[in-house]
Length: 81
Length: 425
Image 1 (cartoon, rainbow over the protein chains, first blue to last red):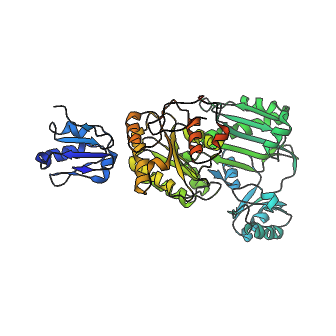
Image 2 (cartoon, each protein chain N blue to C red):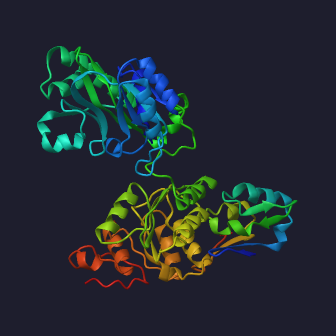
Image 3 (cartoon, rainbow over the protein chains, first blue to last red):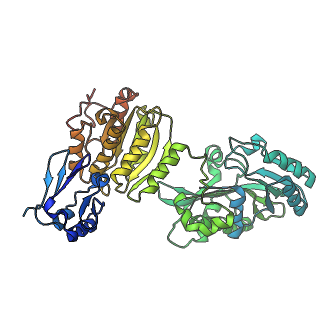
């Protein structure tokens, strides 16, 4: 879990070590919030507030594995499945 | 981007418009050599990007090369309105029988270039327009269709010029119009356009401004003229505040935070969108506000770009509050700008609700933006509040003169955020 001022992104610990997912998330995010750190999903805190709420990360990950929380309203974006 | 007189003359020559024989000198010795080559009486003119040369002593006449050298020495060391000369133009003092004016300007209202011609040259064309409007001919022309000489001819004929003179002047005005379009000028004028004693016409002085954004398209011309990439060619040198604004814009390709210009007021402006900046700046002034800056933000800037620009404005000495205002945005996200400006406030240790006088950006993702603003207690308004009314509220909040010029109560009342407690008088 990592916090920006406005956006918090949570990635389930169970998928953090998935190298394929790490690359997928790094490729999908238009504002570079995710990094493939040697096959592990890492979050770049400095980019969290740049999140454009596109939900591409949510759809790239297994259902429920990535959650985007809007800290200013408490809403959580996650896969419906 | 302003061009020096000697550069404007080079462009005229390049495009086939006759100019008086001249050269530009950087030293008194060079001036003497050019005067010797001209072999006749010369005029020496300081090359500065400001007016008032004659009054300041930056224009002198010389009958001999030695006299030219002495005048050049004086002119080259003479500061005019804070500008040191780039050089001194040494030109043939032509035997002038009559002075006229030929110009092309851009009509922002019609969105078309316009010929301007007068048979009264050598003085400010604005003065002629005021005192002798019947001596000025005007006519729009297309930037898309080929330039037709008859349009120039019509304009010249409208001030009563006929016969051979009309035929000689038409190609000059027509060529001026062509170069105006070709080189993306915002102004191209010859003043005076002189009729010599032999009846011919020749450009004696020229002034041109090129659209700043077009510099990239005219690299070859600018290189030929010796204009460096680093030369801003503005009326004054950019301030450190403005240089930092440019840096913030250039380090992040996302969106625009450009044309940051410093003023000495107390209300910082984060403004933009589709001409909104100019409207909002004028509106702030109309209501007695004193802007600390001008800027143009848009094109979907990143949070960090909006944040850094806001920090720059907030840190400017004398800034009490900022107003974040735009026209209705479609390609800029309200929530992203809201994040940027709030982040700037908090990172500098300010309460956004206190520092942001008003946030008026309606448009894309506004509901999300309004949620953020509500969370931080920032006064905001939607599109039902006009840009002028938003500016008025900002000025009122900072203690300007807005109250004295308040529009009729309820005339522009619109939806405001939860934190809004603006009382309509």
